[in-house]
Image 1: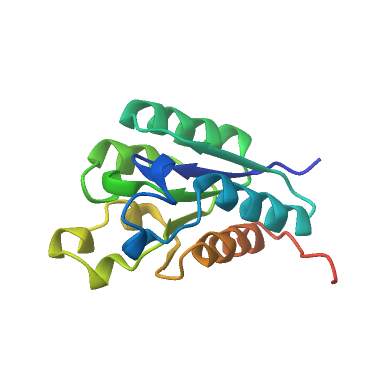
Image 2 (image 1 turned 180 degrees about the vertical axis):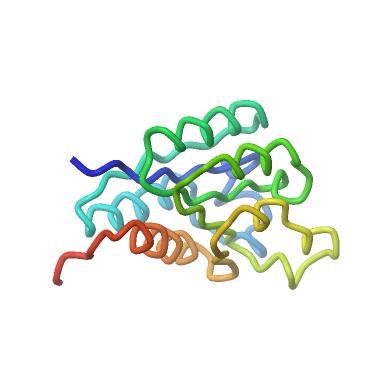
Length: 151
């Protein structure tokens, strides 16, 4: 059986739907989980979907993904702009990593334009709200050679 795709989420993303809806929208993280699981299923794959507010736990999951996953979609939240430790973990992976953000960091505060995650990612999907996750899952799975079932 094919390995799952991991979709990992960093700090404060558990507050989606209520936190700054003018930036992040009203879709909850649970609804995004459903979108990701449905999209992965279109490729005959499972999605392992997780969120944490703790940097060390996120790093542990990145390391786990390196052993258990076929690809990784990562919305590291604020750690995107601050965590060299996360970058170091990502650089050990031999699977495709796709950075994902609901908003467009380049259209926001200047500090958000620096992404440590981007230094270890094949590409980034951002600015499309919840659709960013669907596009990122598509990209990561296609990079693993997965083929989407005919619809």
